[in-house]
Length: 249
Image (cartoon, rainbow, N blue to C red):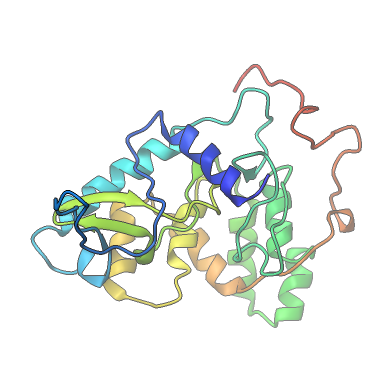
């Protein structure tokens, strides 16, 4: 299924929440054929989280959106894989800059992807990390987080606002079920560092500071073949139809 089909499936999931998904990137003011002026929708910018009277109102709305997303459970026929909405590979350049990757059997395998298939010690040796950074990565990657539905690309450019109202989140192609810390980690992995944005992320996304610090130390990740260290159990068929039903999800 192509990206259009994926976006439509994402809309189906979002029907159970009040999170708004918008299908356009650039907003403008225009008039319809009847002469009625349409709403002006603006991209969020640093002023969203700067010291403005409306900032707390907007951040509160964003917190509600994120909370609702994290309450969406995986399909009942799917084990708790780390995967995109359809149960397949994840589009996430933080996990792999080469192409969509996964799905991952669990967080251990996802962390192995981030370390490019290497153990923590070997990864640290190649990266010439000091001992304290190596131990930070080890502590972070030893943790196991709940798997929650994640937008996975929360950034100022993807938040639409109109006055004191958040009108929608856009760019859902990276969305899927990921460890609970990943929304915060990924939102910190920003192309343009804005101090106010990074500071206020913790207001609307549950913060995971230790995991974020470890992730920043690791840097970019590339392809890794799953057979290198902890391969998939050959008895598991990762196709959507063949996945065993899990009654406790």
